[in-house]
Length: 115
Image (cartoon, rainbow, N blue to C red; front, side, top):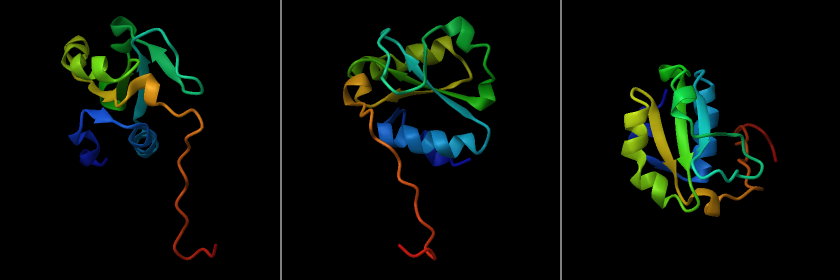
């Protein structure tokens, strides 16, 4: 696993999608966590519930918290970490307001492939 992923405690949507894909290869689930009871259209998420979240495997789970703007989850990140000791917790930059429902990652073509 690439430890550089966890150098920041806030990810953009692009980083979230990239890191989720990369971490899934190592069997790690990256889970989007709704803290405001407003779903992000087109995204898989769970609602914040520390009791149920603690039942997930600590070494195989990363929680990415979002709110409307990303400011509240960023400022409350230490609180979330205190409720979920041992889990990796990250805030989604810009929150729900910056989320682009049609944003997709482009797969990088092999250098040997012709366009």
